[in-house]
Length: 354
Image 1: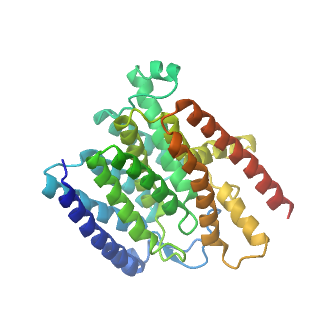
Image 2: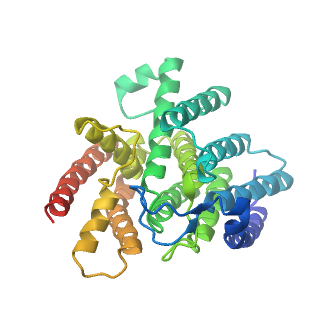
Image 3: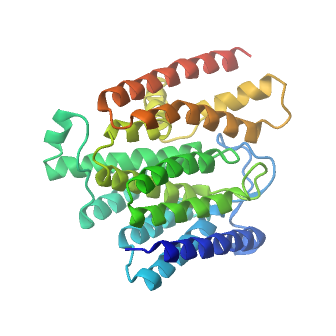
C-alpha cells in the first residue's frame, strides 16, 4: 500500500519529469522521422488547425507514464501490469496512424477489438454491479459480461478520438473526469487508485501547457487511444471499489464521450454514410462553426473547447451530490441525452441555414 509521503514524492517527481518530457518531445518532434509526426493535412474533415502541428502528445504521455510505472515499481514493489499493458498496446495502435502507417478504419477497429478482448479476458476485468436488474442477471454470463465491457471500452476510446480536434477539448474533458474520480477515491481512502489517477492528471496537465490555448502539439490517435482506454479502466475500477455509488453516476460522467459516438453512428447510417468515416457534423464542430459565423470572436478554436467543457461541467457537477441515488442518476443521465439531442439539432439548423 502506498504511503502518503512516498506517494507525494512520486507525484512531485512525475510532475517535473512529465513537463520536461513534453518540452523535449515538442522541441524535437519536427525532426523525428523527417517530420513524420507533423500534421500538415488541413483538408481532412476533422482538421481545424492552420499550421503544421506535431501529433506527438501521445508519445510524450506514454514516455511519462512509463517512467511513472517504473518508479512506482521501485517505490512500492508492485507492477501496475493492467495499466502498463493497456497503455502500451492502445498507444501503439493509435501511434501507427500518427506516424502515417496507414491501416484502414475497419482493420484498426478489428485490431482494437482483439486487443481489448485479450486484455479483458487475461486480466479478468469485470464490472461488479450495475443499476439495472436485468443487466446484472445477464452479466453473470461471462461471454455477455466480456462483450459488455468491450463495448464500454470501445465507446470511450472512440469517443476520445472523436472529440480530439480542438485545442484542449479532449484534454480538459479527461481532466474533469479524472478529477471527479480522484475526489471519489480520496473520499473513500482508496490510496492505490488515487496515486494512479493523480499521475494521469499530472501528465495531462503537462501536455495541456503545449496544447492550450495555442496548440504546439496534439495528442494524436496514440494519445487519445491511450487516455481513452485509461479513463475507461479508471471508471471500472472506481465503480468496483465504491459499490455505494450508482453505476448511472459513471454513465453521467461519460455521457458526452459515449453519446457522441452512439449518436454519430446512427446519424451517419440514417444519412447513408459510413459510420467509420469522419465528417464535419459532430457537436463540437457545429459549435465551432456557430461561433465562427457569429463573427464575435477572432479565435474560436480554444473558445469552443472552453464552452463545451464548461457546459459539461455545469451539467455533471450536481450529480456528485446524489451519486448514491440510482433512480435520480438514471433520470439525470437520460435528461442529459435529451439535452444533447435538442442542442445538436438547434446548432445543426442554425449552421446549415447560414
